[in-house]
Image (cartoon, rainbow, N blue to C red; front, side, top):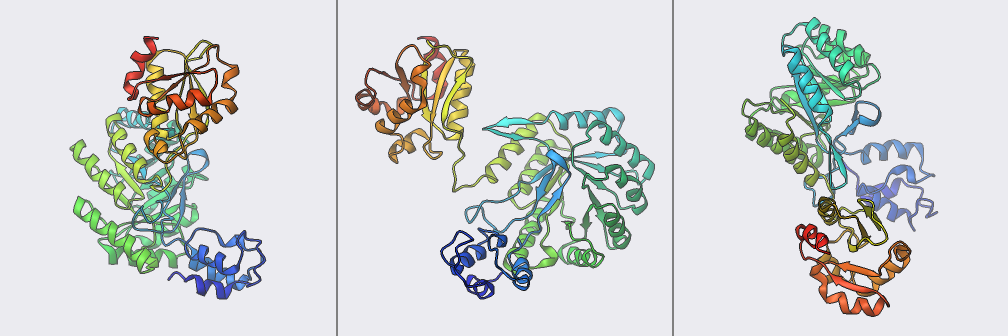
Length: 445
């Protein structure tokens, strides 16, 4: 059970040395209780206190890293039930399942789709994160053949090895040495052997039980065998069961401090109907799945799931922002037009996209308004004539353009007169209210 700020304070040095960056030890303790700071920020804490506080301050959902290198993904580490309480930490991993009974053409096609899945959406690179190789044949040789194909064609992609056969696992896992794979398929009948294989190969162990009690018993056995990194599956397949089980697991871990259920959850959502599969996958993403295994990675499916995941795993209290500067779009020249808008990510990418579609070389000045949209920033006093003028003068763009003309968003046309007073010698032009009107506006100039 998590400690309160006062309980944590009793274990601290109480010197108020300020080395942690806080004025008092009590202030530090309160932040630690809220999991807004790490214990190692206090350099004078005793070893005994470290052991007590380290366990108490650990996230209720165990953090786990799957894979290695640049494509490694993090799971778990969640501390809240709802994202308005605090940002969800590690986005749900999207994986494509490949059975060892599929044809070589199907296997190659899925691996190729995984490799080509990456898209850039509002400044973030989104992709299918992992591949699950499934021992559908229960033949160790066939699983090994599939594993070798994955190693050859997608060497850096994190892997989930799905088998209930300890011998097959023992044969395949060495192919992913140093890549921190998941060995999924530990059940009540094979838990001892599977735990031994996972431990020997430094793999994350995935356990599958029929319901919450069965999973709790399996994680307890796995921990008894020396396994710390565990992924759990309650066997839920139907949407209502996924929703119910995942919610119970998150509540038990966060509200009750249940250590046997404090692990990332994996859900297999493959369906014959691709639309139904997307709906069930979306349910998993929205309700606490750490890994969702899909049957394929078509682009339409990816776009839906990537968008949902990105929205859920952004901080609702901190708008997405881009850097303040003057961007050069389509290689602008001195005579190219100069536009200005705010640094809200969605605003920037929509405006920049329309400008690039117009094929008109343009200077785009992005002003830091704390990630607010144009109207919101203006209403909040962050996108005003005085601040815009100050930004334009400090940006140095005046030295790059031939004509002192600034095009402002149509929604803040009211600023045009004040801007002409603040930017002496400049012409202020009111642009379109909507970004989709920019191509026609720029081409007409």
